[in-house]
Length: 188
Image (cartoon, one colour):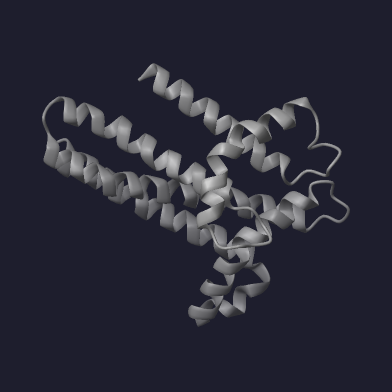
């Protein structure tokens, strides 16, 4: 398990580095470290890019991060159960891992909206590219929520705050479902 965690953390660092470097201006994203990161992650991201629809942004790093996190959860929670012969409980690890991934995405979106709230309101910010990248991730979600939940339209001017509150409530719901799974089903 130690080697698995070490390998996972190295790949995670490289993928996050690539994601950040791709949004930096050209002169910052070209150097020995950047070249190493791009070359070492390309073999993992290229197959994902073939599956994803064409877009102005490259979301393959995000898809890979989510997939790796999901697989890590299955391995870390499922291997001990399999080792003790609990095959039926191992099958329940899959939806639990999915909930854990959804909770992590939810937490990430809370951070994105906080950063967006801070960066978008400032003018001539050097991190405006990062704020724009976050906006490209969140605009479809905002459109869906404010179009389908009409009672929220009056708060559209404060959409970042509304979205943060929604995601905090979802995080509480996800954590309670996960606690129920762990306490009542898997470890009973």
